[in-house]
Length: 239
Image (cartoon, rainbow, N blue to C red; front, side, top):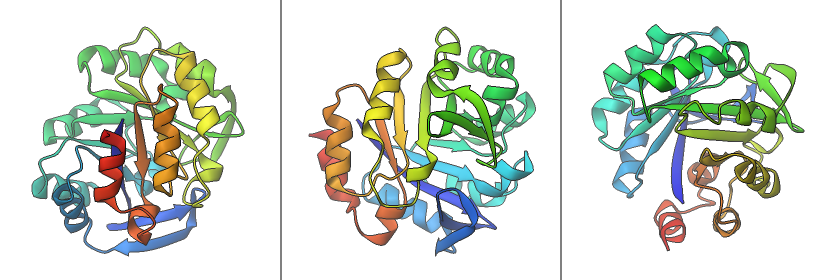
């Protein structure tokens, strides 16, 4: 299982939100590139970035911060937030992003996901963010009637590299991930599933790993707060 340290970008800073609320942002580092480098130096294999402003604006907003991170690190990086057309996908992949995460467009324009996954094999992931099993879009601001499992299965044959599943009610709340729902999703699709939201202890990582079906976990606030020591966490997921 791969551990993805998360850097959420808002107004050029590395922040964490509480349950997806932009008004509930805590700034953890005003130099996201330095934060990314620290994660790399601690031994992480991947980085997970989200352009929070971009998720609401529908286009990249924190591009300068993302490019600064890419310049300071050399581990593969996945990026989500405001990526809603082929031109933006191509732009980020050209700049060095290893994998783009498509969330809102996965619901609103699934054909774009299919086209992108075909054009860029292994470089397109689908972000599925949900409250109580239903998908939310546009930076979690809009809830839909689409069920998580149905959306995942819709991309079963599309060549999608991964699904990043976030339980919004757990995100940033330090209350533990929704292990059962994530494992159920992983068993319902052949696409690798990465858990996001609420991963706040080594025990959480152990529980996700113990399912045997979850391929990765994203953690943010717990790494900043010191609830998870990244070096110890990396040992845990690799053991």
